[in-house]
Length: 273
Image 1 (cartoon, rainbow, N blue to C red):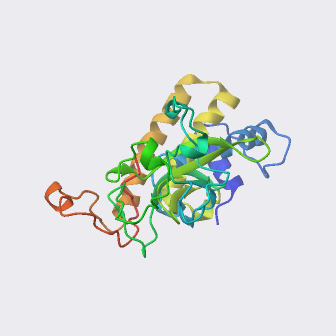
Image 2: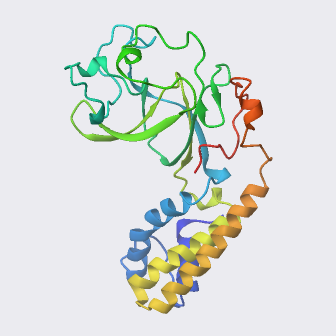
Image 3: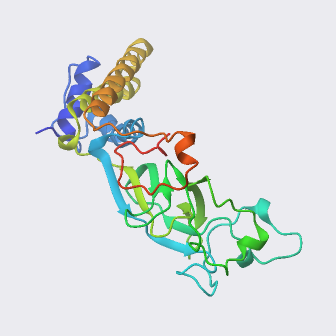
């Protein structure tokens, strides 16, 4: 069973320090450097690809809903973010201008958002765009009068920054999808859950950061990064080949027939860029 210490000792070995650590909490320069860089390196590696071992799906935690939606029929606060560029010269209040219907909380362990989609029992999502069906949006939504929101081929979501009730900045997900499922790459820092190829790539990536902290040799640093890049590409290929194939494009002649309800969650969603 691999551990933080095992991974760090492998990284120390590949950069040639001839030293090792017994625990992350010891006072040695090696342990301190590993503690400093481990989490940041892990997050960076996880963001590189839609790793299957780190895939998470949760029901979106609703923060705000637009006026006229089933969740906010009376248009009370809070409402989803409204871009400043959408300010109405006639003096409309923010509650009368709607850019997105729903605002969801950013999952606490999310390092990369992949897809926002309808639950399987709801129509309207296909190929990374929101397809609105007649009657899906309440006629009482003021946005229909003030803002031109396309009912076809609208992006399924947008990442933005808002403020909580105490004025603190928070990361949020804006969407027109009711009851959205959030598919993302979770922060998985347990080496036992990593794929072997990912573990090897991470070892060299961490080694590159430890080189600057412990050795200061730019040539070794460069070599570690090049090796990590190569191994990460191999790890991504192995991970992709291990998943069932799924088409991520609908031809125009099929799309012209109308919305096609999505029936499942692809391991590599089409929103994943």
